[in-house]
Amino acid sequence: NDPAADAEDIESAQLDALEDFYSEDAEDLGFIAISEGEIEGGRSASNDPRLACATVTRSGNEESGTIVIDFGEGCEDVRGNIRRGIIKITFEGRWTQPSSFWTLQFVDYAINDIQVQGIRTVTNVSESEDGDLAFKVDLEEGSLTWPDGSIARRKFHRRRELERDENNMLKRLIIYGSAEGNHRNGRGFQITILERLIYDRECSAEGVFIPVSGKKLIQHGEREITIDYGSGQCDNTVTIINKNGRSWEYTVSR
Image 1 (cartoon, rainbow, N blue to C red):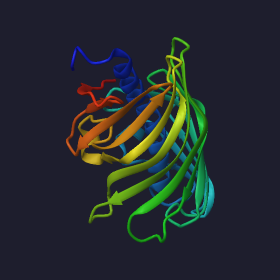
Image 2: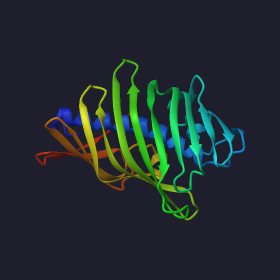
Image 3: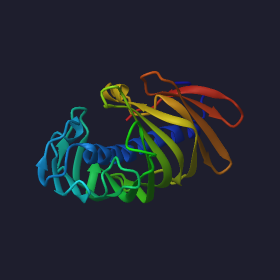
Protein backbone atom coordinates (compact mmCIF):
# COMPACT_ATOMS: atom_id res chain seq x y z
CA ASN A 1 0.00 0.00 0.00
CA ASP A 2 1.17 3.54 -0.84
CA PRO A 3 2.36 5.31 2.36
CA ALA A 4 1.70 8.65 0.69
CA ALA A 5 -1.96 7.84 0.11
CA ASP A 6 -4.55 9.98 1.87
CA ALA A 7 -5.38 8.45 5.27
CA GLU A 8 -9.04 9.52 5.24
CA ASP A 9 -9.64 8.06 1.79
CA ILE A 10 -7.89 4.84 2.80
CA GLU A 11 -10.09 4.62 5.89
CA SER A 12 -13.25 5.13 3.81
CA ALA A 13 -12.23 2.35 1.40
CA GLN A 14 -11.41 -0.03 4.26
CA LEU A 15 -14.59 0.69 6.25
CA ASP A 16 -16.76 0.38 3.16
CA ALA A 17 -15.22 -2.99 2.26
CA LEU A 18 -15.82 -4.41 5.73
CA GLU A 19 -19.31 -3.03 6.13
CA ASP A 20 -20.27 -4.22 2.66
CA PHE A 21 -18.94 -7.72 3.40
CA TYR A 22 -20.93 -8.15 6.62
CA SER A 23 -24.08 -6.78 5.01
CA GLU A 24 -23.69 -8.77 1.78
CA ASP A 25 -22.87 -12.00 3.62
CA ALA A 26 -26.17 -11.95 5.52
CA GLU A 27 -28.12 -11.20 2.34
CA ASP A 28 -26.30 -13.93 0.43
CA LEU A 29 -27.12 -16.52 3.09
CA GLY A 30 -30.78 -15.69 2.62
CA PHE A 31 -30.50 -16.28 -1.13
CA ILE A 32 -28.72 -19.59 -0.56
CA ALA A 33 -31.31 -20.82 1.93
CA ILE A 34 -34.33 -19.93 -0.17
CA SER A 35 -32.87 -21.44 -3.35
CA GLU A 36 -31.96 -24.84 -1.91
CA GLY A 37 -34.46 -27.64 -2.26
CA GLU A 38 -38.20 -27.98 -1.95
CA ILE A 39 -40.14 -26.65 1.02
CA GLU A 40 -41.51 -29.74 2.70
CA GLY A 41 -41.37 -28.77 6.34
CA GLY A 42 -38.81 -29.73 8.95
CA ARG A 43 -35.05 -29.43 9.05
CA SER A 44 -32.80 -29.60 6.02
CA ALA A 45 -29.12 -29.60 5.14
CA SER A 46 -27.28 -27.11 2.95
CA ASN A 47 -24.49 -27.37 0.40
CA ASP A 48 -23.06 -24.01 1.48
CA PRO A 49 -20.25 -24.44 4.04
CA ARG A 50 -21.35 -21.28 5.86
CA LEU A 51 -24.57 -23.08 6.79
CA ALA A 52 -22.96 -26.42 7.66
CA CYS A 53 -23.25 -25.92 11.42
CA ALA A 54 -26.58 -24.06 11.37
CA THR A 55 -30.04 -25.54 11.83
CA VAL A 56 -32.22 -24.65 8.83
CA THR A 57 -35.95 -25.19 9.42
CA ARG A 58 -38.48 -24.82 6.63
CA SER A 59 -42.26 -24.57 6.95
CA GLY A 60 -45.08 -24.07 4.47
CA ASN A 61 -44.85 -25.09 0.81
CA GLU A 62 -43.06 -23.85 -2.30
CA GLU A 63 -45.61 -21.07 -2.77
CA SER A 64 -45.38 -19.49 0.70
CA GLY A 65 -43.78 -20.14 4.04
CA THR A 66 -40.85 -19.40 6.29
CA ILE A 67 -37.22 -20.47 6.57
CA VAL A 68 -35.39 -20.07 9.86
CA ILE A 69 -31.58 -20.23 9.88
CA ASP A 70 -30.45 -20.74 13.47
CA PHE A 71 -26.75 -20.46 14.28
CA GLY A 72 -27.35 -20.98 17.98
CA GLU A 73 -24.87 -19.49 20.46
CA GLY A 74 -21.96 -19.72 18.05
CA CYS A 75 -21.33 -21.47 14.75
CA GLU A 76 -17.89 -21.34 13.07
CA ASP A 77 -17.50 -21.75 9.32
CA VAL A 78 -14.49 -23.12 7.43
CA ARG A 79 -12.92 -19.64 7.19
CA GLY A 80 -13.15 -18.97 10.91
CA ASN A 81 -16.16 -16.64 10.82
CA ILE A 82 -18.42 -17.17 13.82
CA ARG A 83 -22.14 -16.51 13.42
CA ARG A 84 -24.81 -16.63 16.10
CA GLY A 85 -28.51 -15.89 16.32
CA ILE A 86 -31.23 -16.25 13.72
CA ILE A 87 -31.98 -15.15 10.16
CA LYS A 88 -35.70 -15.48 9.39
CA ILE A 89 -37.04 -15.49 5.83
CA THR A 90 -40.73 -15.09 4.99
CA PHE A 91 -41.61 -15.64 1.34
CA GLU A 92 -44.50 -15.53 -1.14
CA GLY A 93 -44.16 -17.36 -4.44
CA ARG A 94 -41.42 -19.65 -5.77
CA TRP A 95 -38.16 -17.74 -5.58
CA THR A 96 -37.47 -18.16 -9.34
CA GLN A 97 -40.94 -16.90 -10.31
CA PRO A 98 -41.22 -13.27 -11.47
CA SER A 99 -42.98 -11.04 -8.90
CA SER A 100 -42.28 -13.44 -6.02
CA PHE A 101 -40.79 -11.76 -2.96
CA TRP A 102 -39.41 -12.39 0.49
CA THR A 103 -38.17 -10.52 3.53
CA LEU A 104 -35.10 -11.15 5.68
CA GLN A 105 -35.18 -10.28 9.37
CA PHE A 106 -32.55 -10.79 12.05
CA VAL A 107 -33.05 -11.99 15.61
CA ASP A 108 -29.96 -11.38 17.76
CA TYR A 109 -27.89 -12.22 14.69
CA ALA A 110 -24.17 -11.44 14.62
CA ILE A 111 -21.08 -12.41 12.67
CA ASN A 112 -17.71 -12.12 14.41
CA ASP A 113 -19.53 -10.30 17.25
CA ILE A 114 -20.80 -7.63 14.85
CA GLN A 115 -24.57 -7.41 15.19
CA VAL A 116 -26.56 -7.16 11.96
CA GLN A 117 -29.97 -5.46 11.91
CA GLY A 118 -32.46 -4.18 9.36
CA ILE A 119 -35.19 -5.56 7.12
CA ARG A 120 -34.44 -6.55 3.55
CA THR A 121 -37.22 -6.92 0.99
CA VAL A 122 -36.31 -8.90 -2.11
CA THR A 123 -38.51 -8.96 -5.23
CA ASN A 124 -37.95 -11.11 -8.31
CA VAL A 125 -37.89 -8.77 -11.32
CA SER A 126 -36.79 -11.37 -13.89
CA GLU A 127 -38.54 -11.51 -17.23
CA SER A 128 -38.96 -15.28 -16.89
CA GLU A 129 -37.78 -18.24 -14.82
CA ASP A 130 -35.43 -19.33 -17.59
CA GLY A 131 -31.86 -18.10 -17.79
CA ASP A 132 -30.23 -15.66 -15.38
CA LEU A 133 -32.39 -14.23 -12.60
CA ALA A 134 -32.68 -10.62 -11.40
CA PHE A 135 -33.93 -9.22 -8.09
CA LYS A 136 -34.66 -5.83 -6.58
CA VAL A 137 -33.30 -5.58 -3.03
CA ASP A 138 -34.33 -2.81 -0.63
CA LEU A 139 -32.74 -2.38 2.80
CA GLU A 140 -34.24 0.03 5.30
CA GLU A 141 -32.75 0.93 8.69
CA GLY A 142 -29.82 -1.41 8.20
CA SER A 143 -27.10 -1.28 10.85
CA LEU A 144 -23.95 -3.04 11.98
CA THR A 145 -22.96 -2.70 15.63
CA TRP A 146 -19.40 -3.46 16.75
CA PRO A 147 -18.49 -4.70 20.25
CA ASP A 148 -17.10 -1.25 21.11
CA GLY A 149 -20.54 0.27 20.48
CA SER A 150 -19.71 1.96 17.17
CA ILE A 151 -22.51 1.68 14.62
CA ALA A 152 -22.51 1.75 10.83
CA ARG A 153 -25.87 2.51 9.25
CA ARG A 154 -27.00 2.16 5.67
CA LYS A 155 -29.98 1.84 3.42
CA PHE A 156 -29.85 0.85 -0.20
CA HIS A 157 -31.88 0.10 -3.29
CA ARG A 158 -30.16 -2.14 -5.76
CA ARG A 159 -30.47 -4.80 -8.41
CA ARG A 160 -28.91 -8.21 -7.89
CA GLU A 161 -28.40 -10.57 -10.84
CA LEU A 162 -27.43 -14.23 -10.60
CA GLU A 163 -25.38 -15.57 -13.49
CA ARG A 164 -25.29 -19.36 -13.70
CA ASP A 165 -23.00 -21.80 -15.53
CA GLU A 166 -23.91 -24.65 -17.88
CA ASN A 167 -24.63 -26.87 -14.84
CA ASN A 168 -27.08 -24.29 -13.46
CA MET A 169 -24.70 -23.48 -10.60
CA LEU A 170 -24.23 -19.88 -9.47
CA LYS A 171 -21.12 -18.51 -11.16
CA ARG A 172 -21.22 -14.75 -10.68
CA LEU A 173 -23.22 -12.24 -8.67
CA ILE A 174 -23.77 -8.84 -10.29
CA ILE A 175 -24.81 -5.75 -8.29
CA TYR A 176 -26.10 -2.34 -9.44
CA GLY A 177 -27.59 0.51 -7.41
CA SER A 178 -26.94 3.07 -4.69
CA ALA A 179 -26.64 3.34 -0.92
CA GLU A 180 -26.38 5.94 1.81
CA GLY A 181 -25.65 6.01 5.51
CA ASN A 182 -22.68 6.43 7.81
CA HIS A 183 -19.56 4.41 8.50
CA ARG A 184 -18.76 3.21 12.02
CA ASN A 185 -16.53 6.27 12.51
CA GLY A 186 -19.65 8.44 12.12
CA ARG A 187 -18.73 9.79 8.68
CA GLY A 188 -21.74 9.99 6.38
CA PHE A 189 -21.59 8.67 2.83
CA GLN A 190 -23.45 8.26 -0.43
CA ILE A 191 -22.51 5.42 -2.77
CA THR A 192 -23.27 5.13 -6.46
CA ILE A 193 -22.27 2.06 -8.45
CA LEU A 194 -20.72 3.44 -11.62
CA GLU A 195 -19.95 0.11 -13.28
CA ARG A 196 -21.65 -3.09 -12.20
CA LEU A 197 -19.94 -4.89 -9.32
CA ILE A 198 -19.17 -8.53 -10.05
CA TYR A 199 -18.55 -11.12 -7.34
CA ASP A 200 -17.01 -14.38 -8.57
CA ARG A 201 -17.94 -17.57 -6.68
CA GLU A 202 -14.60 -19.25 -7.39
CA CYS A 203 -12.73 -16.23 -6.06
CA SER A 204 -14.97 -16.11 -3.00
CA ALA A 205 -14.00 -19.71 -2.24
CA GLU A 206 -10.36 -18.55 -2.22
CA GLY A 207 -11.03 -15.86 0.39
CA VAL A 208 -11.75 -12.87 -1.85
CA PHE A 209 -14.51 -10.91 -0.10
CA ILE A 210 -14.88 -7.94 -2.46
CA PRO A 211 -15.98 -7.67 -6.10
CA VAL A 212 -13.45 -8.74 -8.72
CA SER A 213 -14.48 -5.98 -11.12
CA GLY A 214 -16.60 -2.83 -11.30
CA LYS A 215 -16.45 0.70 -9.91
CA LYS A 216 -18.26 2.62 -7.18
CA LEU A 217 -18.25 6.28 -6.18
CA ILE A 218 -18.16 7.11 -2.46
CA GLN A 219 -19.01 10.70 -1.50
CA HIS A 220 -18.91 12.34 1.93
CA GLY A 221 -19.07 16.10 2.26
CA GLU A 222 -16.71 17.71 -0.20
CA ARG A 223 -14.65 14.54 -0.54
CA GLU A 224 -15.22 11.79 -3.06
CA ILE A 225 -13.32 8.72 -4.17
CA THR A 226 -13.83 6.12 -6.86
CA ILE A 227 -13.08 2.51 -5.96
CA ASP A 228 -11.96 0.45 -8.95
CA TYR A 229 -12.07 -3.30 -8.29
CA GLY A 230 -10.08 -4.27 -11.36
CA SER A 231 -10.86 -6.49 -14.32
CA GLY A 232 -11.47 -9.92 -12.81
CA GLN A 233 -8.40 -10.75 -10.74
CA CYS A 234 -8.96 -12.93 -7.66
CA ASP A 235 -7.59 -10.54 -5.03
CA ASN A 236 -8.65 -8.06 -2.35
CA THR A 237 -6.78 -5.15 -3.94
CA VAL A 238 -8.53 -2.03 -5.19
CA THR A 239 -7.45 1.18 -6.90
CA ILE A 240 -8.55 4.34 -5.10
CA ILE A 241 -8.95 7.47 -7.25
CA ASN A 242 -9.62 10.83 -5.60
CA LYS A 243 -11.51 13.76 -7.14
CA ASN A 244 -8.24 15.29 -8.34
CA GLY A 245 -7.41 12.18 -10.36
CA ARG A 246 -4.66 10.94 -8.04
CA SER A 247 -4.73 7.17 -7.61
CA TRP A 248 -3.08 4.41 -5.60
CA GLU A 249 -3.59 0.73 -4.88
CA TYR A 250 -4.79 -0.56 -1.52
CA THR A 251 -5.39 -4.08 -0.23
CA VAL A 252 -8.41 -4.26 2.07
CA SER A 253 -8.48 -6.74 4.93
CA ARG A 254 -10.84 -8.28 7.45
